[in-house]
Length: 116
Length: 107
Image (cartoon, one colour):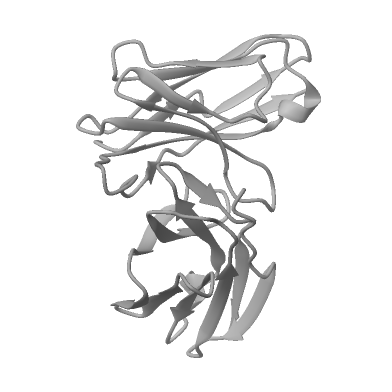
């Protein structure tokens, strides 16, 4: 399978615990994006990388959230001291971008987080 | 922000045509995407408009007017499998999505 892969697919945790999600993008894609989606809403942008550089992070994003893409391949998204409001589907997407724009985003199946 | 607006829900009959409108307020963007998302699944790409005008792709067409801040997605010959959420997204080196329009196709 050469698509975007995310794991774990489901995570249930207690409030205050830390969680980490992993995303493996399509191998030739230089851009990697993290989004969050709740029921009835569109995906909300969190952050994105071009190769290993984190180019933008949403101003609405709490500093409890951190993401890395250490070698320009896979990425991790960590949420520290989780809160019930963090419960959502976390989507990763990748694209081959150029100066003309983002390029088509290919999404993974998502990691569903439930904070009790 | 882009203030992307779409209707929340639409219902149509199998075989009919449905037009989903998307309006936005932004100073500039590279292009406009439409994505389809079935319940419980990831969004998948439908269409992309860079220039004003109509892009046709089988049963789906998308239109963009930059001067009017307006786009629409046209779904023709509706099938039951077209029941899904349709997301409008602006490309400014990341995609900013609207809340989506849930389309229900009835027999």
